[in-house]
Picture (cartoon, each protein chain N blue to C red):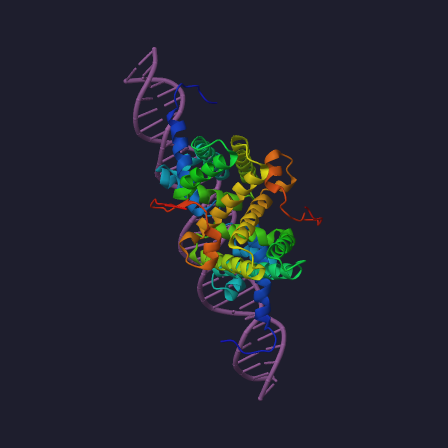
Amino acid sequence: MARERVSLSTAEARREAVVASAVTVFARGGYAGTPITAVAEHARISPAYVFKLFPSKVSLFVAALERCYERIVDALEGGAARAETPAPADVLHSMGASYAALIADRDLLMLQVHAQAATGAPEIAEAVRRGIARVTSFASSRSRASADEVQQFIAYGQLCHLLTTLDAFGVDEPWAATLTAGIRHHWPEGGEQT
Amino acid sequence: MARERVSLSTAEARREAVVASAVTVFARGGYAGTPITAVAEHARISPAYVFKLFPSKVSLFVAALERCYERIVDALEGGAARAETPAPADVLHSMGASYAALIADRDLLMLQVHAQAATGAPEIAEAVRRGIARVTSFASSRSRASADEVQQFIAYGQLCHLLTTLDAFGVDEPWAATLTAGIRHHWPEGGEQT
DNA sequence: GGCCCTAGTGAGTGTATAGTCACTCACATG
DNA sequence: CATGTGAGTGACTATACACTCACTAGGGCC
């Protein structure tokens, strides 16, 4: 089916570009709420060609999700490397900082939220499971933290997702103060927080 | 506009029934993925009548969400009343148990997940914010727990949502064991866990 | 020039969907 | 019976969407 080449073929490059477009566009509209035409427009190709590169809408969504989790694991790896000491708590903390920086543009975050909602499609559910499994396993083995610490790491990550979708970091009310305390995040225009 | 009656008018009763249907049906398909016809079929009325009861699809979704948060606050109240001691940690723990029992049927849980994903619609974003604000404020004031404890309570609730959408409680792998440890939940067929 | 292979598309198909509107029908009241 | 009111619907519109297919264009190779 595929001819072997040393470098990426043009079609492969297109696939990559379409996946990148899919990440941003699906992140805005979600799975059911985003037509393939929107992805095609963003990638500046015809909708018909999208279907030549990917057999179905769901397979494109899954490809976008997989790229999302790849970038997350990369970010965690980078964070771990930047930890001040190899103590598990330090490594995990540094991973958190990298993750906060990664999701500054919100696309990777929102794609995860939409994927969680789209688990009605078995292919998507499976992809999310694989992604979470990878992230959890990696955080666990790379930091050598206890299971409880890793669980808390993921739990607060989920809280961060919720707070970001709600724009709670800018809300000046007691409930928002309670929930956002100590949660690292970057403002869209840069500028770090706690 | 509305004639005053001692009991609910038939139309009001219909509204209630439609909202109940909306909760279950939107919980399965999400906002963008669920047509009004599906809600109408579930409520056994014509789609046209749904639009006479609710001005738009989004307003019906918001009504369903609001009912969802009402039931959550009720459950937390019940849990607080059932706490063994008035110690904040005990009250919060008991609230958690009630919440775990409430979302046994998954509809209320999945509706929240879908709502979080549908925050692209401002009305929905606002409704979720109101709901989370109510839940957080209530948990905080009723339990008199510290802000940190309340934050953790919500964070682990979010983790529970993720694990439930992934069906992670039935997965026999290390990552699943790490993430599900100590998270209370009920199997669809009843039978409590940890 | 002629051949071929692959990137890429225009134009469609069948179906679904939010929302509308003119209408019917049940029933309560005088 | 006559009449009015509000519950409920059939049939429609305009649009959008997932997916298909027959086709063209461009560039390497003889």
